Length: 388
Ligand code: SAM
Ligand code: SF4
Ligand code: SF4
Image (cartoon, rainbow, N blue to C red; front, side, top):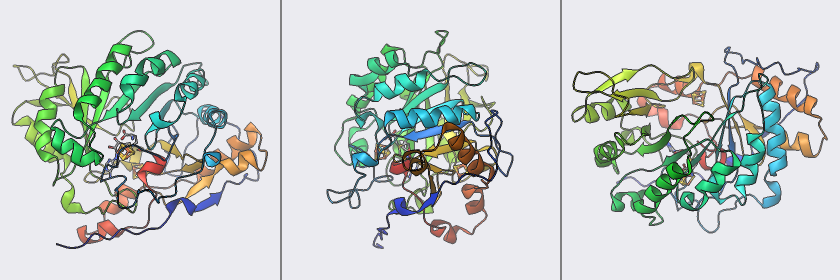
């Protein structure tokens, strides 16, 4: 068996100053990058800490008691996050996802949610405001978050078998508590839109070939017909610490094939441009999609790159802007805000300038490489630092 080598490089140190362009760029809601991709979606990481040690994300060997997390003074305050979010929204962002680390570990997160819930798009619409969580604290927090204005949540759960799940989260956390969190979210009305229509909750399952492939069908059976969309994520080579190799990736096409052996599926249209998941609906006895049975999603970031429509920006816990999940550098917006006393107009210009220079398409480029070179493509920032 080959030994796993974990490079201990602090990816957070690669910072670029956010500079003001020669001419101010006023927001008009229509920003686009060098590949004509709009800025639509902002993921905000609110903490780099987590109470799980999922081996594909924060392996224990690296994220141990000696790991240097960011000091609290380095984190963006809620006011700073909301200020930046307002500028992003003026540039066209319509959807904000809070993430981490584990976002529910950030104290008083509901206060941030209530601030973000008040933002409006240039057309006067509220944002699509959501959060990704491991679900461990959701039973306690769901009601508060809903009251603060959170609309939806995505809960990560990698299996229903307790032994498998405990092995994946690596802190002995039981499945039952995550399921209780999902129930609490449903009971609190997370997943109901402003008009009271059910837009659904999502559950994300990362599939690792050696660990939880046998959980695919039990998970599908459990969530079919529940109003919850189960999404299977290909294990990705994010960060520099998870010891990724292609052999561990179960292609999404395989996932669909396995489920189809028990439940017929029909391909569904994407809900929106840039949507990360391909949708498959459960079919009725006539082979037609049955909305009562619901749907699954597959996120094929390894085997089927979807960079062409990628409209997502990521704001790290301490205020760096990343243009790609696999980026190796971020632009320091906090410095501009805190030390350079930038006005909102300055922030808008700097953000526009950065987005207009964007040509990231990591997954597409990786797919062009021969398999043996795919694991060594550049250094990347950790998922727990900029969120999923
Ligand atoms: N802690 C929260 C959670 O687990 O939902 C939010 C942050 S987590 C980084 C966001 C998402 O990234 C989760 O759904 C997680 O399963 C996914 N993720 C983390 N590492 C991954 C990897 N190597 N490949 C694919 N997905 C990954
Ligand atoms: Fe924590 Fe989420 Fe990463 Fe798991 S995937 S270690 S829950 S941040
Ligand atoms: Fe977007 Fe980067 Fe993922 Fe491509 S690899 S879809 S550019 S985040």
